[in-house]
Length: 347
Figure 1 (spheres, rainbow, N blue to C red):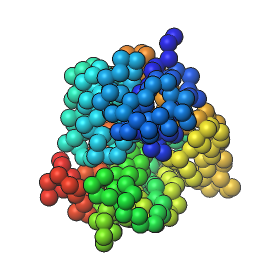
Figure 2: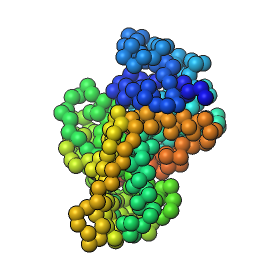
Figure 3: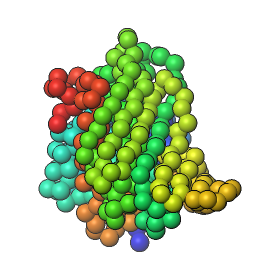
């Protein structure tokens, strides 16, 4: 079977990680890379073994050798580039967040469905066997009835005005960059607890701290209330180092996930710690898997090969629900971006 031919939009760090993953994958190969400048495209191609280069994003999108486009550009460009790619008949794997807000995400989803192509938001952790094991444990009832999920993705970076993370124009800040991960996990666990792929929260409340000069959110937290009583406490940040872990508490025990989102890039082992009610010490559950981004690329390629409308690990409806929850979190703390309505996050 011919391997899926990937075109990479963007030449930043995350694009490089994905390109490395494609090279390690079983079902994909790198066909072309597109950048706004020929020099950066050529440098990326040289580093990652890409055969064709383009000095514009549109040229990459129009390249007939490309079957699937990976969008690894800054957040505010995602919607436009994804729509242009699906209109050109390409499958699209778009970095998270899928778009800046739900309104944009709905447009991208509608375009993908209208053109009959595959669309996935690139939550790489969703394709990893560790995440499947978490879902299995929750569904299997070993933790009992799930009452609380705690999940964090946060790091500390110094303020550099020219960097994307600190620019409102480029969609910087914590919620969109990394807060989307714990929200996604909480919705996944809530779904597993009720026998569904995901569940959306009935209520979202939040608090956040803003950088005085840039206006981006530096630290933020939210409480998500799900139907049936499950509660999630999620937090994120770009200016505060926190324990980027997850804990899932049930009536019969709890599960500690030391690294729920950033798993071994080149493959290897990860661990979950199961604390059973009345038992000590905790039980270590070891999960071994291949390269993180290679697994993601193969999950996408398998869905494309099978003619599926969604990648099972991260459906379009799941992404729309996640964007809706992020909109509500941002609205709760009063965070808007250029071009959005003042009342919040483009609902």
